[in-house]
Image (cartoon, rainbow, N blue to C red; front, side, top):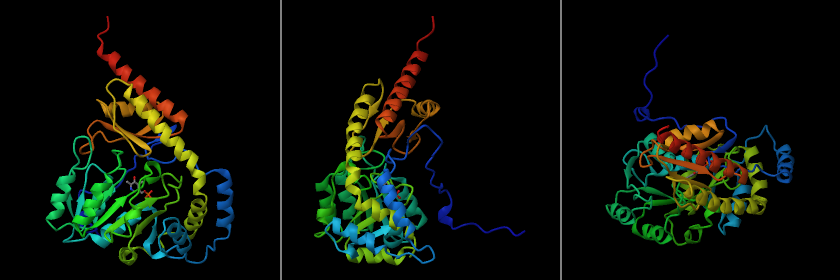
Length: 363
Ligand SMILES: *Cc1c(COP(=O)(O)O)cnc(C)c1O
């Protein structure tokens, strides 16, 4: 048998994305909605899916869904693009605005997918790290943009995994300071209730990314969308896989989008629970939660990796960032159902207290 030559050099040292999804009783690691799509919407989905021709290729651009999203956002169809999850649109971004000789400005710690996509496409990555409290170093970003070589940047708002919104005035200053494409990743916008959408009309270099995976309980379906100037959308269309968004996903997303008002009470509960989880975390000695505008909370605690193990031993899966750059001893917990949040807080309190006990010399 012949050997196989090496893969492309930019793959060396890249780790495949690993969601670290393990079997557990409470899944609080992936920022999913704790409630699956409710029965009456599911029934409507089933009716729609039954009518989907399976032998025909789907509408490549999902124009029916695109029209719904455009109308809800006061935009035209050609200012909207759907993707196989927001993740596909992020990859398309790196293909369309990145590449050899092109430069991406990243604001770590943030969503690791951005950096991976840049590396895959041989895009140069310029990092402007966040401050100690994870706020954006605004003056450093503006100064770096002034050098004039940045082709695109992503402002995640709220930022994942740290939780807070970016400052709107800052984003407006960035939009005026550069002709780089400025993508505002609003994956959690339904929980923050803040959006840059009203500024699309005045800023051709602004694009907004959203997803059905978080607030709309469709992480399993893979559907995301981009709102941008029609010229920007046209460039994305050139690099996308024509049939990446299949007909079944289109049908499901149409039904969910039409019924999106029904997700409001669940979103409100998550926002209320977020406050409760943060307060609960604050009351555990040595635990420092960071503020959050999303459906998850990042917290700092000593021996985070060990505590992750102890939580997992109790059936509770949270996300371990303790070895990630800039996030030493940080864990991220997604807001679950009230019962899951209680179980999480209790397990963490027990684990932290248990560790305290161990330090006390036995008599
Ligand atoms: C979840 C997420 C996305 C998109 O996720 P998809 O499931 O691919 O739609 C994009 N950006 C951030 C910051 C996210 O957390």
